[in-house]
Amino acid sequence: MAIVVLNWNGRDLTLDCLRSLEDLDYPSWEVILVDNASCDGSAQAVRDAFPRVTVLENEANLGFSEGNNRGIAHALSRGADYVLILNNDTVLGDPGFLAVLVAYLEAHRDVAAAGPLVLYPDSGRVWSAGGRLHPVLGMCSHEGKGEPARGFASREPYRVDYVPGCCMLLSRSALAKVGMFDPDYFLYFEDLDWCFRAEERGYRCVVCPVEAVYHRKSGTSGSAGSDRLSSIQAFYYARNGILFAKKNLRGARKASFLLGQFTFKLAYSLLHLEGASALADYARGIAAGLRGRNRRGGIRP
Image (cartoon, rainbow, N blue to C red; front, side):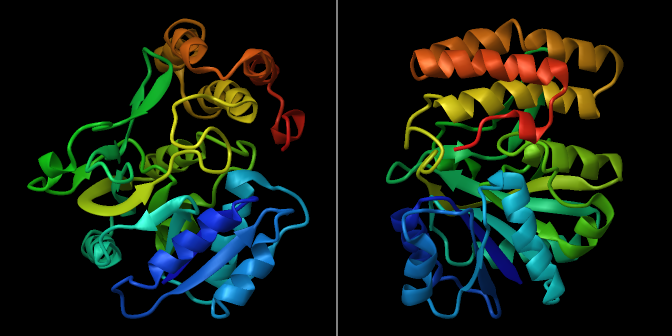
């Protein structure tokens, strides 16, 4: 079992995350910290505080997709049967959550990815209880957002359209068949894309409603704890919705999703953009998506 934590200039958040994992109740696991060319001393700080953590340093910011791919590849090379993708801006809630997820995957070989409940800090309310795709709206959303977590306590594990990459357990066998995250996305939609590809290969993606982690939203890429879209978020949020539709959808579903980019999703985004620069980058993202430009056509932090 390997836990992959990706970091980009989030030293203090990452140290808090790794510190919380010391309470994890699971028989055998290792942490792989992938650093995306941070300039805040993150990599050395982790080495000093957690000498047992494997630290992989990238020479450039590879984004969420490719950065995590490097950690996944390292985990698989060391024989890991399961890989947990975990955001660095999370802290552990239930120490036993990983055992619950692994047990479910062990018992259900048609499940490629499993996730838990992810909560807002100190609130008892859900940040995500799994992801849903809304083709008519041109958007995806988190189920149960803002609802009391106790309302999910009696539910059995249930199927979702995707497991958010904030906390996502992947099996080795599914990775062999589905592949890794698509690096073209850089940031956003890579989890939906991966789960969509898994479903096409006959797998299911599920949420086991155990209160696993607390998420300090957008701790490294945007406005921490808010629903505002920073410039980098705005660009990839706009571009990658179009990219996802082009890569994965067909027929009326594709047409509906693309239309939604300029109606419902646009209206939502305009209400959440963080200033004029974010608006400009949102427009750039739409243009890049329509032109079909890959990750090298985007902006980099």
